[in-house]
Image (cartoon, rainbow, N blue to C red; front, side, top):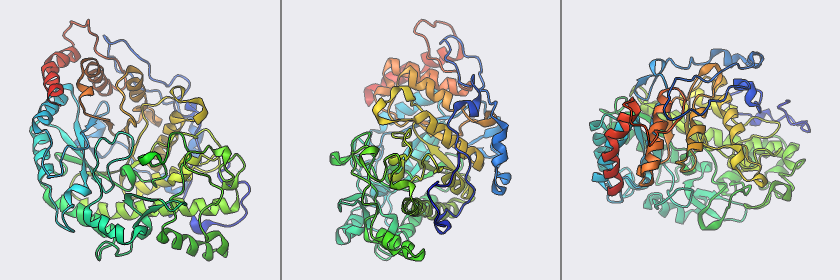
Length: 552
C-alpha cells in the first residue's frame, strides 16, 4: 500500500522525522507467522517447549532502506541481567503497587512487600518494576531528592535474588485507568504552573491538563531557571549517583517516562472528571502558547501562514466517533495537504521530545550496565478506521496510508532503547464492535516496526487480567516475531491482593512457567498431585502466597 497521502501534492519533507525510511504496513498475521503460526493452548499437565513458527514472507525484506541494512543483531546484548542469547524463554517482571513508596518517602507495607517478593521469587519471576515518582522524590524543593524508600526497596529486592526495572515517572499518578492513588507533580512545579498555566498541555477549549509538562517548553528555562529537560536530567543523574552500586546488577532497566502514564504520547484521552470515555477519539493537545508558537513558525516556514492559526477546527470533541467529524471521517481533512502538514508537525514535536529525553538519559546511564527503555501506548480503538483518530490525537501519525510506529522504532534504535508496548493480552474478538478496535493488528504492526529497526521489543498487559484467555494471549504475543525472535521481557500488571488469590495465583504460576518454556501456556491443575517442577513450585510457595495476600 502506498505510504504517501494520495491527495497530497505539497512538499512537506520539512516536517519529516529526523530518522528516515518507512516500512510497509503489515495487516495480516499470515505475513508474520504463517497460517499456523499461533501458539496453541495445552493441557495443564503437559509443558512441552513450543516455538512459534516464523515462515515470514521473505519478500518483505526487499523493502529495506540503507539504514535497515545495519540493524542491531537482536540477541547479542545483555538484557535484564541475563545473556539474552542463552535465555530459553521470556523473563517475567511484575509491577509493584503505585504507592510502594509513600508521601513520607518510606516503603508502604514493608512486611507485605517482603512476603510478596518471596512468593514471586518462588513462582519463578525474574524481577519487579517500580515507579520512581518525581512528585515524591523531588517534592520538597528543586534538586532536593529523597531516595530513602527506593533504596530500602532495592536492598529488599536484592536480598530475594530478584531484578528491578525502575520507571523515571515524570507524570502525575491519578485519573487514568488503574490509578488507585494520587501523586501530583512536585508542589514547586505546580506553583510555577499556577503562575504560567501554559506550562501544561491544553486542548481547544482551553482545558489545562496537569498530568505532565507540555513538550512545547522543553528547551525553555521555565522551571526556576532550568528547562524541563534539564530538570529531568538532574533527577536521573541524582538517581544514578545514589544507586550506582546497584545499576546493571540489581537495577537492570531504566524506563524513561516521556509523557502521561510514562508513555511517549500526548494526554489526548484524559479520564479524570469524566472528560473522556472509551472509545472516544480524543482531542489534540496543542493549544498552550508554546505549542501554538511552534505551529505558527512551521506554517510560515512553508509559506502557509493561515495553517498556523490553531489546530484543526473540525476535529470534534473527546467522546465523538470519527464519522461525526469533518477531520476524521473516511475522506476527511486528515487526508488533505493541510491534514498532512498538521499531523506531521504534531507527531514530529512528540518524536523530538522523546529524542531530547532519550539523548539525556543515554548519556547519564551510559556505562552503568542498565538498559534503557521507553513506553508506547497501545491505542487500539478505531484502529480499523481509515484515519485512526485516537492514535492521531495521541501523536502517532498512523493511518491507512502512513505508518506511525516505524519513526518511533527508528528513534529508539538510534538511542539504543528497548520499545515497551502495551495491550499484549487483548484479542479483537473481546472488543465492542462499534469501537473499531484492532489490538492484535496493532501489536503485529509495532512488532514489525521494532523488528525492522533492529531493536528489542518488550511488553505489558494494558488492563489487570487474571483469566486463562488473557494469559494464553500474552504467551502467544511474547513469541510472535519474525525469525523466531521473542520479547526481551514481559512485565505483568500488577501485584496486588487479587493476584495472590488461590485461583489467580495458580494461573499466574503456570503463566510464568509457560514463558520460560517458550510460550506453552497452561495453569497448574488442582488435581495435579505429581512432582513436576511446576507442582513443586506451587506447593512450595503456597504459604508465601497466603501470607502475602493476608498482609496486603
